[in-house]
Image (cartoon, rainbow, N blue to C red):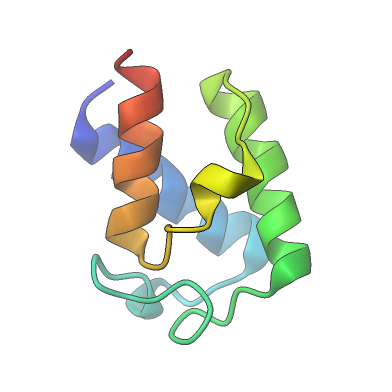
Length: 81
């Protein structure tokens, strides 16, 4: 899966599952501050990502994920191992 495919997949479920406005989802957008993702949303995101991409997310690894770019980097690092 390419980086573009990862980004598009994440954007799609953020829009469809969490009803985040597409124009708020940019590379530099901060998950909490800019996109309004709260801790309950984060749980939903983790479940969706684990199911779709097939790997487990560790909460300590997500501590440094602050932006959309960070999130895509994290997912890409897990699926390319």
